[in-house]
Length: 496
Image (cartoon, rainbow, N blue to C red; front, side, top):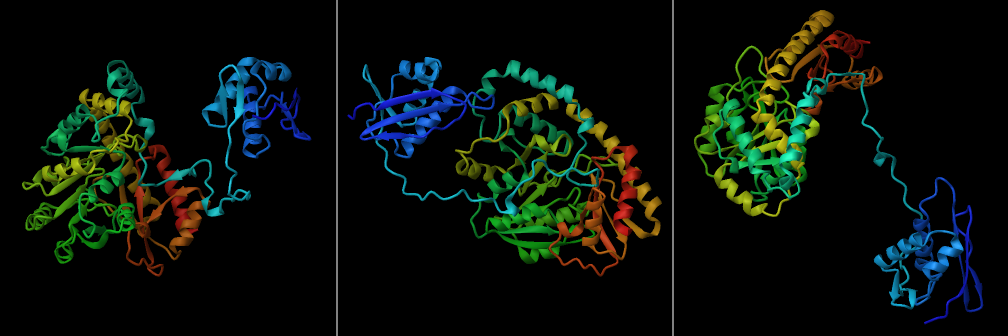
């Protein structure tokens, strides 16, 4: 081992000091900062020594000063030096010999060049917060002000009290069975679905569940997507290399002739409230699609029932799954629309034959949902609080919808045509204007209005030359008293 060099340790205001060499001896200089913004003393010692070791300023087997000696020279506690040395040992920079001291480990020199850190491209720089609009007609939001937060928190406390064991463990890959039983009982009442709790898979959103679903099939499958339709799913499937075919719509939903012609393995549908047009698929088309799926073994319908809970003036329309006798429908439901999107609680109901494949394929899957939130959902459902909340919000949203339609007709008169379907949390409308879609978008941004046109959802070419511009208008996040003013802003965006 080399002899210990001359040690010069001083506690000053600057962080770094020079290293001095005297022949074959080393002068180790450690200068600490007393600034209020400085890191803890042990961290400063650790960082200084680590840098000197990495840079080769301290050679292998170099003996560091004793803890007591360094603590005295730096005027810091022995505990601070001990913590710094132990961290260096843990990371492999230093080794210790009993009753002899601490020594530097031999390290290979870095072969990487000392280049400056690359700067992020402007396109990759993220703003601290998502842009907030003063006015919003977004179809993606719900109203958090009316959510029973106190009730939810009380059930959360109950979970923490009564489920200590469960929340301290990794959950079942499909989610806790108790929670899936609560969902099973709920969908039986509200959507007419009969299934086993074991068929339910809980996920953090529609996209992750669909991602898992398509992995159960061969890579050369074909997926049928409604056009216009849910662009996020369409793009995700394309990115995964799935052969995606566009299925046009008629006045009864997905065109059955196009489905038969394309013959997809998975046909994605939103039959209860087509997204984004709002079309409610009649029983005749549902029967046709189920018959088509039954004609061949490897055909399935994926029913995305994203906001089926909200119907105005009529009872809930039964799900497509409730009509399925041959287990050809894969049902996807969510709590994002009825509660809060930030909860990220969605579920999928698999046919039993696909369930076997799922369990084999995803047996090592780690459940991504927060277990406390899932068990809270269980109590929220079982207590009846969920149903009460949905009923309350259905009345609120119905009033918002009617108020928004009246206001649009009042301000736009004969320059607006509304597709008035009594369901969901959005409807479509088109406005007669000479402005282009991009011009309207720029104006909406200028007035801090969140607004989405039909181009977002359709792969078909949407012409700016058409004097009628089509939009998807959401009303869930509006307070009733602010609707008329929001429509005034919309009018300015469309015409001024």
